[in-house]
Structures are given as C-alpha cells and as structure tokens.
Image 1 (cartoon, rainbow, N blue to C red):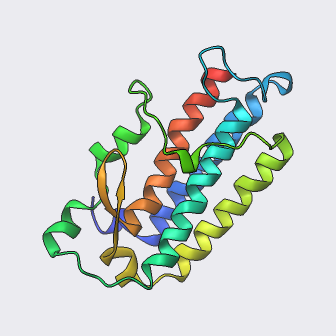
Image 2 (cartoon, rainbow, N blue to C red):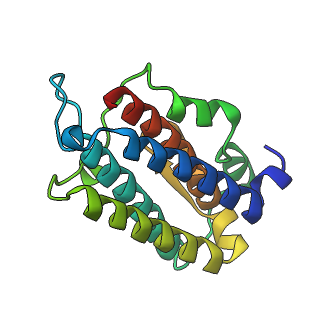
Length: 175
C-alpha cells in the first residue's frame, strides 16, 4: 500500500469507519439474543465484542512493548511485514474459519453495556499508543500474526480495522 494509505490520518479514518460499522451491527442484534451462543458453538454478540476489544488491547500493548525493543528487522523483512490488500482480505474473509489465539477468547462475563464500554476503552488505548509511538517504532518493529505472518506495528494497527470488519459480518450473521 502507498505511504499515503498508511498515514496516521488514513489509518485513523479506517479505524473509525470500521468501528462505526461494527457498533451498528452490534446494536442491530436483537437485545434478547445478544448473549445467546449460537448452536454451532460460535460466540454470542457480546462475546464477539469482547474478543474484538481484547485484540485491540493486545495491539496497544504490543506498541508499548515495541518502544523498548531493538530494531533488528532487515529492510527486506520490513517490506514483507507491510499490510497488503491480500493480507487485509485474509482477515476480512469469513468463509475461512480460523481459531483465534486463546488469549483473545472472550471470558464471557460482560453484558451489552459493559461490552460497549470495553470497546470504547480498547479503542482509546489503541489510539493513545498509536499516536504516542515514534514512527521508527511503528515502522521498524514487527510482531508475528498467527495467520498472516510478521507485521509492522503500523500494519497491526491498520489490521485492527479489518478485524472489526470481519466481526461486523459475524454480528450480521447473528442478527
């Protein structure tokens, strides 16, 4: 993707657009079904929201940890650790079922209001970390995504928006 597409402003706009769509889909799930776990063993709408916020908190923590890490990635590794249309599509595509890492699984203790509050808190934490991070950290540190490989921290932040989109579709299925 171009440098312009990866600007702080562009990423923040994408984050806002996808979160707005996610929250709208969350509200569209009928109140009596928001905590209902689907018969196929998937997550309830509230559990989906909790998972999304857990992932987002995790990315904020990675940014904080990245500030203390040495920048050892080669230019070639950093180039392949960028977000691409293909990588974004892998995350957005719900036809391929994947198992989220256990650390991001919902604990199932939230209600609808608490889930909304947690989504707001995780977004605030992500934006604070993103806005406060040095560009050298965002573009020079990588962490491995379990399905698409190494990503720079900037790419991880953008990926959060695509993750929201994936789970907005899941909420639509639940509605």
